Length: 466
Image (cartoon, rainbow, N blue to C red):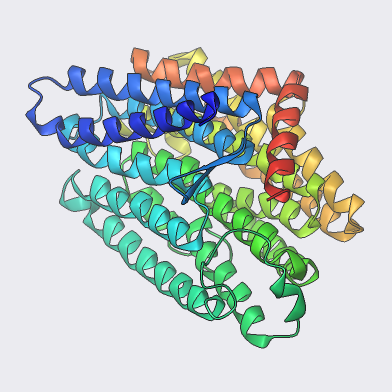
C-alpha cells in the first residue's frame, strides 16, 4: 500500500467518526460539545481532502470509492460549506443536537457523491444526502411540515427516474460503473441508451432545480428555515450537478452532441424562468430561490459547451454560487428571525447596520455578475466556453439574462440604502463569521481568480481522464 493511500483511509475514518458523533448527539448535555466535535471533524476532512487533491494521487478504496482530484476538490469544498451551515444552525430556534443528529448522515452522503465509482454508489449517496435534509426541516415545527413533504415527494420522484435509467444501462454494463464504457461507442444508435441519458438528466434535474423540474424550489426554500434553505441551495443542489458531471462526461461521453443540445435548451429555459419569475417577487427569500434557479441555468452553459473548458467553467461557478448563496441566506436568516421578510421591510438597512447592507449588496452584485467580484469571473468563463464551442447565441442569451437579473437585485440594494430611522441591528458572531468568509472568497477570487481557475482545471482534467 502506497503511503498516500493511508490518507484515503484516514478520510473515511473521519467520516465514520462524524456519523458516530451525530448519532451520539442526543446524549450530549450541551450543544457546544457536539458543535466543537462536528466542526473539528469537518475541518479535518477538508484538510485531508485538500492534501489528497494537492498530491494529485488517483486510487480506489474498497473498490467502490475513487480518490482523485475531482472527488477531493468537492469533498473539501462541501466539508467547508457544511461547516458554514453548521455555524449558522448553532443559534437556530430548533434544538441543535436534534439538527446535528441528522446533519452527520447528510454530510456523509454529500461528501461521498463525488467519490462514488459506480451509479449505485452515486444513487445511495444522493439519497443519504436528501433524506436527512427532509427530517432536518421537519424537526423545526409544524409550520415546516409542508416544505419537508414537498421535498420528500420530489426526492422520491427523482430516485424512481434514476433507478429506471440505471435499469436501462444494466444490460450494457452490469457493473454500472462511472467510467467511459467502450461498448457504448458500438451502440451509439441504441434508443434505450438515449432514453437512459434523458432519464438521468431528468432525474438529476429535479435535484439540481432545472426547468421544468424546479417548481417546488421557491415553496420549499421559502417554507424551510433559512439555515436549511442555505444548505439546500448551496450544497444539496450542487451535489446534483456533480453527479450530472460524473454521468454525462464519463458514461455518456460518446453522446456529447446529444446532451450538449439538451443542456443548451435546458439552460436557456432555466435562466429565463428563474430571472423573469424573480422580477415580480416581494419576499426576499423567494426572490433568492428564483435567483438560485437562474444560477443553475448559468452553470448549465458549461455543460452545453461539452468541452473541458466548459467543465472547468461550471466547476468554478458551482464553487462561486455556493459561497454567494450561503452568505446571502445567512443574512436572510438573521433578518427573518426579526420578522423582516419582504423587500420593503429591508428599507433603511444601511442605517441599521452598514456592514450587513454592504455584505448583502456585494453578494447580490456578485450573483448579477458585476466585476470585479467572483460571480463576474464565473459568468465570463461560462460564456467564453460557449463561444469557444460555437454557441454564440447561448452566450448572448446568458449575457441578456445577467442584465435582467440586475433589475431585481438592484431593487433590494436600492431599498436598503433608502433613509429610514430604525433601531440598530446587532449581528451574532456566528452570522458575522459566515458572511465574512463568503465575502472574502468572492472578493479575493474575483480580483485574483487564477488559483481557483487552476484548481477547477485540474479537477476537470481528472474527471475527463477517468
